[in-house]
Image (cartoon, rainbow, N blue to C red):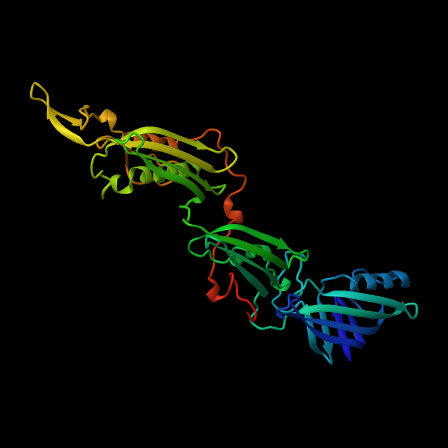
Length: 421
């Protein structure tokens, strides 16, 4: 004979009306096995005087109150369930090793069950017929992986300039009895960003049962990857000689970073990259931070700015190269250095001094940019490290929604193993 224990109520000498096992597969066409749905229906004669397990004392209780108490206790979802034949447990739910589910607040099966349907009929003053149907979902796969399905598609689009746009979208399904919130899998699911690409967006949708997560990532190939910690970069550089005798270099650079990054460090990086481009990286310093030579540049114009509502900075600079020099002597025999046009060459016309250095202050534990700066360039760089009294901290640290990279597609897909990929 069969025996059923549910939520502490013991039903002995049961007649099994139905016992079904139905494998459940993912509905996306991939055919991933998720779990097995068990449906057990039994009829049992229940006597209030000989069957313990109810939540209140049955002594002197009316038949109606006993019947309602039995029905209420058996109708409680997500309770422990045991189905035994001839004293041997055939089905136990939640299974051994199940953890307390965050979604349900108690131990459950793989699909937030078991759930029941119960009908109680009176036979006599203290005897009832209990018709009970229990449905539970048990994952029969070995290994104990909390992720029972992860399927995705990859879409590649190539534009007229041969830049590639990659869109990865998929769905992951987890087991409730191992208590893994799919929302915590964001960083694990995120595919690695290929070299030369930037991540444009990441989108997540959590299903109403709290066990499934839809995800979508969009990566865009770019001509030049922005320098860290910048997320986007744009600018331009040009050289001109409008007067024919002098060469002008000018550039503009705008950097945008994440909400939690240091704005001062971003501005310092922007200025450093701009100066390296306008002046030339090889002319700045040699090993040890010592300038290779005096650079004949005159600062013609400079501007920089910050956005108030975003972590974005922009700077522009225009310089001219000093004409070639020659050594001459005045009427008294004193040596002078002039340019080819005969004008005296003094350090006032050289904005990049070799003999004047400025230590970059360590602000907010950010490592100062290199190389060491001199003269007017040090003044400009220090402007980038001024504390802005209007700057406020981000509402939350970016790590709470950070998208971490994970293993590559060759080692298991967007980030986690999949069943039968």
